[in-house]
Amino acid sequence: MTSLSGRVAAVTGGARGIGEGIAARLVADGARVFSLDKLAPDQPRDGVTYLETDVASPESVAAAFHAIDERAGQIDILVNNAGIQRVGLVGKISFADFSSVIATHLNGFFLCASEAVPRMVKREGGAIVSIASTAAFVGLPGRGAYCAAKAGILGLTRALALEVAAAKIRVNAVAPGFTRTKLIEQGLADGSLREDWMVARVPMHRLAQVDEIVNAVRFLSGDESSYMTGQSIVVDGGWIVQGIPEAPDWLQTSN
Ligand SMILES: NC(=O)c1ccc[n+]([C@@H]2O[C@H](COP(=O)([O-])OP(=O)(O)OC[C@H]3O[C@@H](n4cnc5c(N)ncnc54)[C@H](O)[C@@H]3O)[C@@H](O)[C@H]2O)c1
Image 1 (cartoon, rainbow, N blue to C red):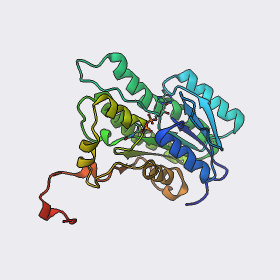
Image 2: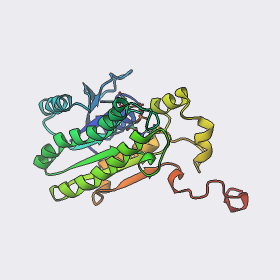
Image 3: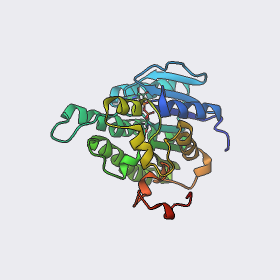
């Protein structure tokens, strides 16, 4: 891949999980990285500046981008990764929980893009990559807010891609399947997920490693994807394309 030297990136939720992996990769490939996260990292990484930010708050996001202006004077890459999970059936889940999922994933993307786009227009280019999910394509009972937020991310990705294409800003998404992070550990702990159940339904029979998601984000952040915009890359071990998960053995290449 070509170097990201001289580029400045903002990664939301960069303190841990997939976001931490993205921040580390962009630094390794030459970018200067700002993490916008509510949390402080357990172990700060060289090359990453950590800005305590709530992506659901317009004031907090504006302050973070102002800090980036002062310290770096430019923004070339925005990765909208910050996310939370709240599980509950419609009729039972509170409006506050539902709203917090939409606010973090979808409003967070909107707020950060609202700050980044005018700055990227001045730079005459940029790349925006948002982390969606397989939940953007399928229904998951108990995860209505999450499914809606992630499907919304794909809708905003397509609309924004058209708004900014002529300004040489590309807008794409990555849709991960099950990836071993704290978000999944939370589901395992509250009983809404089970590892044997997840693995059995992934055609590749394993969860994703963080780096496998990071590779797709890195591709969409750099010049290698220079003619791609408005798209999403699904990285899920084959999960969403299966029509008949329990196909008989004689229809499986491995048997
Ligand atoms: N892990 C998976 O299986 C999986 C699958 C599909 C999509 N995703 C998506 O990937 C992204 C990263 O998830 P993860 O698994 O690394 O989760 P994680 O919980 O390990 O990390 C999420 C990070 O986002 C930060 N964050 C949460 N709310 C925030 C806010 N309001 N403002 C700023 N930062 C905030 C958290 O502090 C944390 O550092 C999320 O958007 C998630 O929905 C994860």
